[in-house]
Amino acid sequence: MYIHQRQVWPHFHWNQETITRQLASVRHQQGRLLGRLGKCSQDTANRDINDLLTRCILKKDPGGGRSTSYSINHPSKTGGDHQA
Image (cartoon, rainbow, N blue to C red):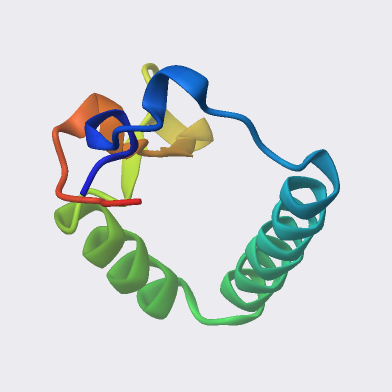
């Protein structure tokens, strides 16, 4: 179920402390993932990035060339089946 499908949606509120703690955990995990990608071979990094692109977790940013960059693909922008 998506959050906007819940009956309490018009009265939605959150606990800032809980969200801050969860975001800190996600950022820590993201940093660990990026650190691991930096330590692996180029072939392994390419394989893993292509896998994340195929699964629509990452998206390639405009531009490219030698300075290719990627962003996390947010479910609301992909129509993905991520549920709350």
